[in-house]
Picture 1 (cartoon, rainbow, N blue to C red):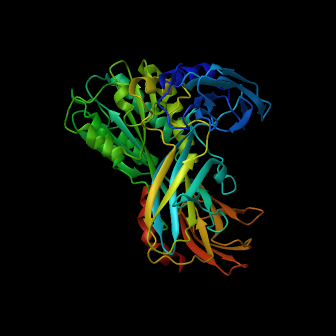
Picture 2 (picture 1 turned 120 degrees about the vertical axis):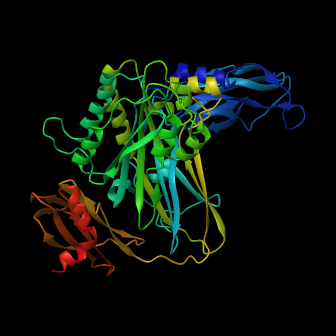
Picture 3 (picture 1 turned 30 degrees about the vertical axis):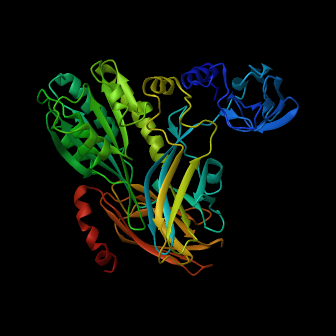
Length: 537
């Protein structure tokens, strides 16, 4: 990843960090002046010599040295040592200290840098003493959510603090799991602008692009994930739900067949509000859910029936993506709801399929990069604060892309970028945790394949799992992993299949038992409440 040095200097100019000059308005020993400036391109650390006094810098961005020099004294600032074989140049690093020195620019040639957006989606605390946070860690340079985090490397990317003190990964059983590994619900909401500014052929291109996301155009096979639900709404002057939380492709395609050009008003804010309210981001032992809203539009809100304030409130902490067509869409308004990287603009509807594929590819990284961080807090009473800090080279007040530079230039800030997230919780009645075996995986699916995992939580022991799998209905092939920590289930019967899975850990004596319904159509889902009686026949 190459560092955009000219871009960074431009953003520095916007932030007035590259400006020259000095000031005497500074606290410090009388007769001395401070030294400050900006550092870019750093990987590792560099050591400065300031008139012979050495000082180490380890963070890109604005800096202020602890070393001061006497007023009206000659000063010289040089880089005397670097890590990672860096080459660094110092601009405005020498002269006469006539007031505080504010314009030192140190540019290093590091080729890798990190700049993250820490996006928290849900927070929850549960008995006996479990704290959970769902989050994305998004690379701001590529707009891709990181998908390589685990319990071993999480503290290299995120600082976890409780009451401003580090949470011990070992003492608190700090762990990170991917969202897809749980029995979770993932909802994709498509909101389609059908106002009369669209031609029928243009609207058809939107519908066709969505259809190709639901099923394979050649084989007719479903392309939905095991835990994925689809909701579709249309909007002109009003917002009309066509289908809500369905996973049968035939039901979804039938709803898309109803999409037609509507009236001459656009209730964009109403679509944002209603669409984002079709799911909740929740994390608990009983329920985990997440979703994203993909909105297609060729204009702005003209109906005035829903306020922008209400729409912003409804979409807070929700992942929103826009497919904006033509010159009438005001992307500056759309940026109030989502980062600019989540807005895909088209010059014409001929680009619809290509742009939607790009949007879905990015959304896929958000799904793959959605994590749940859990730990057992040692607190047993009172109010407490959890803080998550992204560990990176550039904070959100420093632009790393052209789009971020433009946003800061226009608005003065990156409103949808977060370096830190804070949560408060009450620990009254909390008690110690004990070893727990947890089976994770979607329990009701309409796909032919799903993977389940067994995980031992709140214990340092290495488990030894024994799987007992009973097929109650239909036919299913099972494939146990070599470490016995996961099983792949593949439905081979044309109709539904029902299984009962019982896993026991020989080391801790813990177990978990759950049922799996592999449905073949929407009607099969009606028997969810009868799974126990079917397996007990």
